[in-house]
Length: 354
Ligand code: AVJ
Image (cartoon, rainbow, N blue to C red; front, side):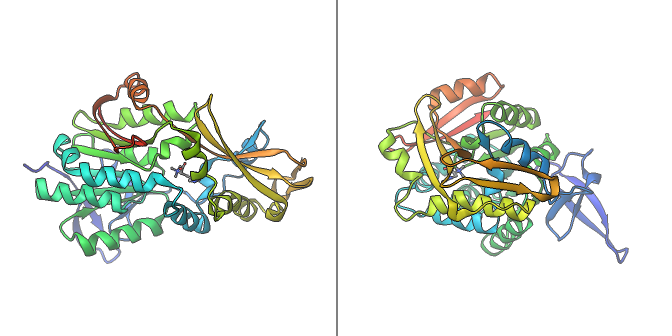
């Protein structure tokens, strides 16, 4: 049984009319354009504008902090790929093993037409789900949402090569704008993996899930990967590896901020420090000034003195207790369907629905 999809008509520059299926809500279709083919962008959206004032606002906070979003420039994305392969960093491996063993159960429990991934997608992890969706239902729409066109194009090329039967719809936008635009009537599985929710602070967490829940239709599901609270002897090395890759990843954010704002952070004059805060149940990742330095932001005509030993909070990675997380999400209107974990119970994959 196939869902009646929205049809949009696109007039190409040559005035040749072609038909293209979209997964957007009827009132959203006219706001999106597909250029290059298969990658949809919101007309008029400017994702590249430099968020100068938002970076300065968090840097003037106490403690000074940065949004995790800025970690992922080209170098940061490459370093994160390396982190995922570190022996100490159990998260990626563990989540992948859960999805590998449970993909058929997950897809059987979520009768959908479309997999919407928050993130550029086409990791090993997603492949398990796509394979099962094709095996059980014979067809599959795959719609990754990401702010990186390069990431979406790579994902599209891989899907076309490995799964020519899959209908690929890359959505080039921030998550909240992307998931709000997708057709509510089309049964979808939203996929948010890797414990990315660990980056959200107390304000961002409910805001994100309320927006997602209100974008979800009556036949939609959410698959959520969450790293679990556990002994700090396992947690802390995962964020302080012996090769110093995590340190390089965290300090690299200042190279990116320098590039965006023309500031003068000196990476050689800072060091990395991280610990598991047991009360907040989160890993906190800091840059610590090795010597006093004056940081200038010429474009904003602003400066601050970064004193020796003072810390800037670059990233948090919250850890969860799955039962409590399920209850909390219940207050936001997301009901638990299933809970999958690994034999050591280090990581949880939760299936929820509206
Ligand atoms: C991508 C947010 C899931 O918190 O484990 C890894 C990022 N930072 N090592 C995590 C990260 C340092 C990662 N997430």
